[in-house]
Image (cartoon, rainbow, N blue to C red; front, side):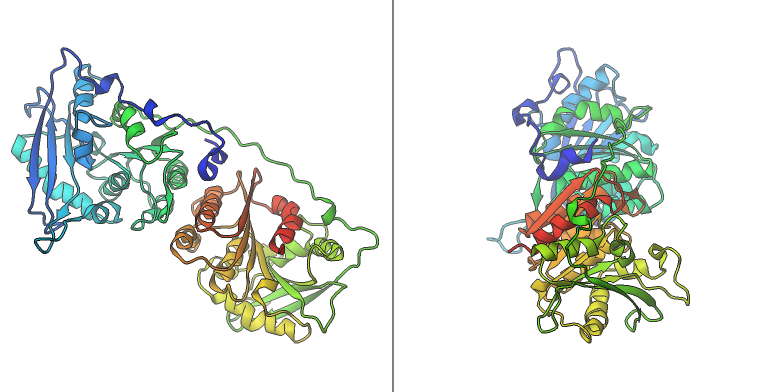
Length: 563
């Protein structure tokens, strides 16, 4: 699946009408098929969720007498799945599939979320659904395993398979993430998951799953995911992108999984229409992964005229310096100072700070920032701007041959919080200000970086928008190296800050234990868009390098400083 097809709304695709997702032949009563029995129960004495009342239903397939173990499938929001005229119609589907031996005899347990009665007579009852379903803990799994399922087994004399591969759990939306959570915490009990339009967002922390999947020992689970390209984009997150991140994590970790994309919104229609197929897949002896993606085309990038030297354009000066930090103790670093030819000491200059300065300062590199600055300042497309090109800190007497390998880099760049911002504002800028007249206005200051330097740039502006109002992030590492995957959620749930953000990402960027870089940047762009930030996102086919970002630098500078 190409990532670009799901880019922020998928507006370029012709959309199937919702009416086309209808229950198929397997969800219709068929002549000659013996029907199982559906029994309704109430559960009012929960130990896991004291004070809750709920209904649940038990489907017992025709002919089940307890002599042979049956498969088990548990459904959240059970009332919607058990109805004969709903989107899914599970008892009818089970009857038909079992009758023609397309599915082993399977018991269905359909559990509604808990309701807490009003504390006073005239108070409305309170739904416990989000607390049960969206909380990332073992509580709900244990509730099913210790309370509901034993009651159903005892009451209906059920013989259920002890093999987790023959026990699955299913749900829609928050019920979808609840199904995944139950199996994630109790793979000894549930081996299969069917999640329709799963809410892998930050309702109660579920956005952590892509990272947990990548960084946890692989579990013996088979997972079926269904999602719609028109699903939700709200305060809690972007559902299509969040499901893509889960899929990417499962693929990276080698899970047996399948994903089906449709054109519906946040509804049970599509999941219901394909449920006969997903039920068969989840219990099949050999599962099929999603169709493998073809190699994405890699884009070639060529620097433009603004990145080349031209006769008559005044050339700024570049000097090398060494700084020993107090905030990052025992670290030393190189930095390079670019001062344009047009600088005048009686006029405060704008400032732009670059992380991994060695890569940006080179005149034969992929970015060539001094040349770009010279050209744009000469054209008056950029105000007179002093560039500070900082290398990451290093502990030790001798700098590494490759400055990318400075041993304090990840700590400085990938850590969240205001540490690096303080380093700039309390050490670097005051030091440069001793010799040069720097503007102290946020609107005159920008910060840029690539990869971990890109998330570092964003972190500085996020923490100190009073000091830096402009950000250019190239292939930013908004992944869980040191917790940076939280930014899309933070952006959505925090009052907008007065910063302008230019993002560049590449379809062929990294996919490793820390996360999926293209999707992480798509999530950032979606969050910024949702919260109304002034931002620009350029998404290409590049890899994890500076080539595309370097080509874009002149455009990014013009955009960042545009009135």
